[in-house]
Structure formats: C-alpha cells, structure tokens
Length: 298
Image (cartoon, rainbow, N blue to C red; front, top):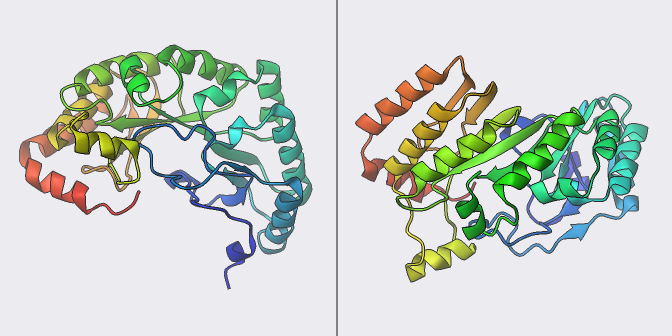
C-alpha cells in the first residue's frame, strides 16, 4: 500500500500545483483564521497543531520510503502561523531525518509573518524555509475587507518586504471575480498597484468558484453578493496583467480557470493579452458558465 497512508493526515490536505513533487508533512490541520467568506477548503476541520512526537513518527516513515526527499511541503492552511521557535524546531527535525532536504515550503497568511522579525526570518531561511505560498487573493482594500481576509493591502507590502529582506521567496494568489459584479476593474487596478511594489516569485490565478459550505454561498442566495460574469472575470484578468510591470511568472492553470494560461512577465505579456482577447471574443458566456458550474472541487 501507499506509504502516505502510514502518515498522520487530518481533515483536508491541499497543496499548490507546483508542489506536486514535494514530500508532504503534516504539522497543522485546518486554518487559524477560518473566516474568509469565499473559502470552503477547510470546512469542518478545527485548527490542530501536530505534536512533535507525531511529526517525528512521520519523518521516520518518510526517511524509510523517501530518504532523498529534496523538498518538504508542510500541510495545513497556514503552518507559518507557528511561532519562530516552533518552526525552528521543525526545521531542525526535518534536517535530522532527511539529510538531502534542501528546502521547506508551506502556506502562509500575511498576518502570520507579522510576529516574526527580519532576523528570525533570516534564520528560518538559513534552515531552508523558502518559496512560501501566500493566499493574498487581492490587493484591493475594499475586497479584502468585504471578504474578511483580516489584513489590508498595506500589510501585504509591509510583511512581504520583510520576506524579501530575509531572502525568502514567496508566491501570491490572485482570485478573479472576488470583488463581485461590476467591481473587477477596480480590484485589478488596485491589486496590480500593490503587487507592482513587491517581487513575488510567481502569481497564481484562481477564479472564484463558490461551494455551498462557504459563507459567500449564503450571501449569494440572499442576494447580498452578485457574482461577476465569466467575461467580466476575463476582462479583470486582462486589466490586471496589462497593469503588471514586475518580473514574475504567471500561473493560471488550475481547474478554476476557464481559460488556462502560463507565462512570464514582461516577456509573454503581449501573448497572454492576445490569448485573453481571443477567448473574450470567441467563447460565449453560457459555455464559460457551464464549465464553472461543472467544477466539483478545487
């Protein structure tokens, strides 16, 4: 049987597409925040901190099956919330059991970075913590507030500049459609303005897909939130990409994207905008919405 079945995994386990070849290790389950209106990823899972003994047991199993694992991805919605000392202990433990491990990744919330000094972040980087994935979703204050993200656009700048000073690479997420009907253009322009002040390693694009477990689903049923049309989302995406003027990689190849794309900015900007223009012109709203409604899971 699969050795992954021997490991301690609790609740839902998610990882970004680009962590497909990373060794997964549970150190937390669920999300400490768990208030984002659109999110149903960790529905019904209470936040849980894995005891060190449990983590060590898992590392022993991993060592026997994957002794040459090069990268470890810590699971849970935001393991970076753990204290500096806890992360330090985990990093040392991983080093002890996996001699070939070069880097350690995980999901983080912007608020998780606040409690750590640049000096502490540098020490974590020295231990291999790198390429942290942050679910920013937007850089527009109104959207962040309405969706209960728990931080402002300015917080994104402040905290990510600390990561940059510590030489920790980080990946952003941008969620099209999050601002609702008629608000995509504003969201795109304000978000691009914020992202342009930073240096994300990648920007990952997801398009809002609402599931019944989310708070936003209930708001839609009550008429308090009107979803952006699929064409609006593509136009929002077009605006966002056209306003970006930093060097980064854009990854829009998740199941939620009606028009998948991958490219580098600035080199591929013209190509990406042309692809979006073609899709906007040639694919009908009904066909795009039909695809969205067919998505069973992210």
